[in-house]
Amino acid sequence: MSNLLEEARKIINEVDTEMAELFVKRMRAAEMVAAFKREHGMKIFDPQREEEVIRRNAAKVEDEEIRAYYVNFLQNNMAVSRAYQDKLLCGMKVAYSGTEGAFAHIATNKLYPTARKIAYNDFLGAYRAVESGECDVAVLPIENSYNGDVGQVTDLMFSGSLYVNGITELAISHDLIAPEGATLDTIKEVVSHPQALGQCAGYLHERGYVQHEYANTALAAKYVAEKNDKTVAAIASAEAAEIFGLRVIDHNINESKINTTRFAVFSRSLHEHKRNEMGVHTILLFTVRNEAGALARAIDIIGKHGFNMRTLRSRPMKELLWQYYFYVEAEGNIYTDEGTAMLKELDKYCDRLKPVGTYIKE
Image (cartoon, rainbow, N blue to C red; front, side, top):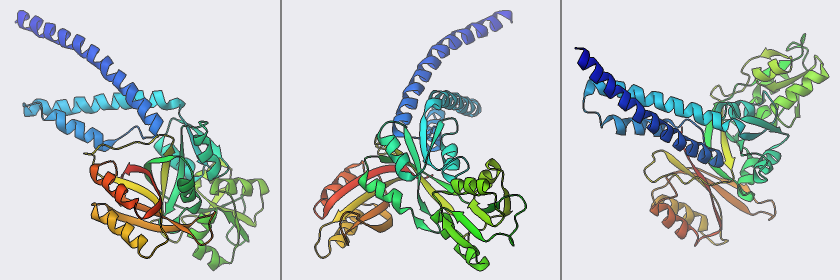
């Protein structure tokens, strides 16, 4: 019996030695993954990739009882790898517009919880910080489910040099916040970002509050805190109220109770998703030639190559009066043979054609 135990321990020791060497090799690969994710502004956790790895590797274990434990082993391995990548990326600098408590800050914290978050006064400042190399990525809002697209950021996509490599959604709950002692009856003026004012327009109109635009919601909260006037309130998050010593007068005042904002991750490098990845979406910006039917032909081409267009909207070009460019989001991976063929055909009808990037829908 003792010989059997000794033999088992010998095998375990040999396997543990091999596993230690393989573990180091695996973690070196994790370093490479972290470097790639940093360069392309990608999130550490990729659930689809992890599910694929577990499914593929678990199939290699024939014993069903042992296979269940092997799945746990793989999950633990991946958790350790994520923790190591997170440590490596702690020095990552992420730009956003606003200040602590802003919804952009909340979204940034959701994507990069341990990274250094650098606040800028506006979208342009955050975008330029990445272009110049001052920051690694920028997290900027591109669309709200109730109030539509964020035109300034869309314009930066069109005119700037950065790529979109990820999009996340954040449920938005706007609160009316004010100094201690203020009530709904004492408030006369409300300040906030134009998007927030628009999302709460019905509420503000019903109460007859005078509206003033501010750079963003958190800075509006800071302004109200510094003013300390019971007649002036801000529309911002409960987090902003806590940070600036204000109190929430009324919760969730936005008209749509399923209010959601989509935030895009901008980086200097383009990430081309693999052909076999599922759920890939493509963002395209283009102008069409000044001839009859050019836009209709462009739309037909996108559909013909199997790209399911989910979004189409136009934006005025700042430098040309009454000229427009078009923003498209479509289901499909542009970095495939079909994608290449589509771009080649689109080029016949587009004066300018700019693939902004791809992302996997959460």
